[in-house]
Amino acid sequence: MIGNSFAPGAVSLHLIGDLPLLRPEEQVFTAMLDGWRNQQLARNLAFSTIEGREKAVRAFFHHADAFPWSWTPQMVDEWMGDLRSVRNLHRSTLRNYQGTIRAFCSFVTDPGYGWAAICQERFGTHPVQVIHEWNAAVHVQEAESGPIKRAFTRDELQMFFDYADEQVSRVRGRGRKGWLPAFRDAMLFKTAYAFGLRRNEARMLDVVDFGRNHRGPEFGEYGVLYVRHGKAMKGSPPKRRSVLTVFDWSAEILQQWNEEVRPLFPTAGSGALWPSERSTRVGFTQMNTRFGTYRDSLGLDRGLDFHSFRRSYVTHLIEDGWDARFVQEQVGHEHASTTSIYTCVSSDFRTRTLRRALDATMEAALRPVRKPQ
View: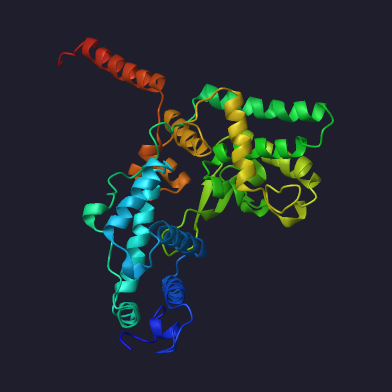
């Protein structure tokens, strides 16, 4: 057998020599995916990443209606065209799909794993790379979110939070049971903004993730937040960081939530900061649905999403004069350029900044020049 028979993902570990197969094409394809899964596990990639990649490969397989040893670049072009024109997927999603197909083809064409040789032996042909520079999207920007995505203005943010609080009072006033989830979501939204959290970072918080900051004793038990489920680098576990509390109101609402309201949930014993009524932790669907309902009810534009809380956190701290390096560390950005992309300073802030600069220049120009004694 060609290739290293002991390498994770090698054909010899998934197919036995010349053993006849009942459904050879389907079985070889399944063995390829199993081998690729083991190769990625050996590279320490996350299970979620591996599962997502397999789904993308299977999606292309179904669209092309062909097995990998029959794939062509033209099939990729047709698939990408369908995803863009019919499903209207984002550019970054399309590029990720292309990267996945490229990685899979690199695996099955690598002589070290032996898949090309077994395909040639059984089917008279072999897989080739179908993603090249000339038919792949290029990653040219650090952030590829749509141009409509933005931060809340301060007035919009206050309006959103006020509306969330009003829904709690309205539902509770009618004697309905839904006030607990409404209260939870209002606190969750405010916490996401108060600490500049991504959606999964906010969802995965536990009660024990807060602690004291000896340089900020006024925040009590909520002086620092230890984020344990930050955005991971490829092949690495979730990135951890600590976020210092900067808003005094955030410590107050968290204390109220943990001491008075959260214990009322039947699943509060799980330790999750945001439990649901039937499971240990609130789900993404619940978070997204509630956010979208509030946004649309207020007539706010669809450029605002859950991630806008994080954009707003960065923007408002910069506008309020916080050091840019401090803000970068708070949100866990590797590079300052990434933080700058998140900063959507208002026109009013820019106008004030310009006015201060012009006033300072004018004052310096009009200041009397002291003659030497």
